Amino acid sequence: MTPAIDLLKKAGAEYRVHSYPHDPKAASYGLEAAEKLGLDPARVFKTLLASTEKGELLVAIVPVAGTLDLKALAQAAGSRRADMADPQQAQRSTGYLVGGISPLGQKKRLRTFIDVSACQHPTIHVSAGRRGLELELTAEVLSRYTQGSFAAIGRV
Image (cartoon, rainbow, N blue to C red; front, side, top):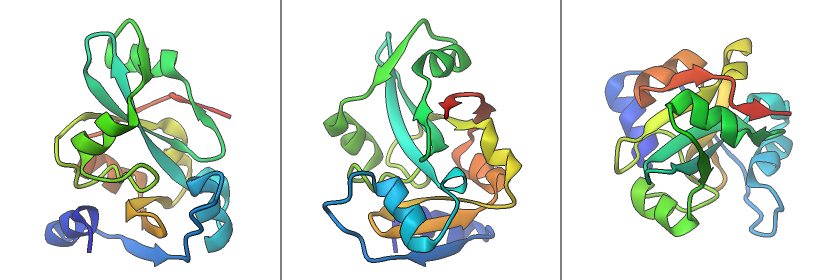
């Protein structure tokens, strides 16, 4: 179990756990998950952390097939700019290792933004908190348990 799975289980939320053999040499952990689970990469989302000009950490959830638009994230957060967070800072703040950061069950509650494309799919996949472990859930469930807002923050 991971903190993400524990959170959903305690809440009685609807979700499914999928596991696959993780290859530490994979160039992209998110694309590896899509490939090994036989999923459309548009339905697999990665969890990224960014930092605003004021040092606030933000969680951004975008499809693994695309990239995070930092300007759009800053705008959604009401900030002037955002940059990718330092990986060590991301790990300390979330309690998860880079490559396995789940948007759910993080140590600190951070403002969370989910790319609007998540709403186009019946279910999406996000990290369950460990490399090789994915959660399948609806965008609404993800939003509810992260207190996340939907915004156009992804780029294809």
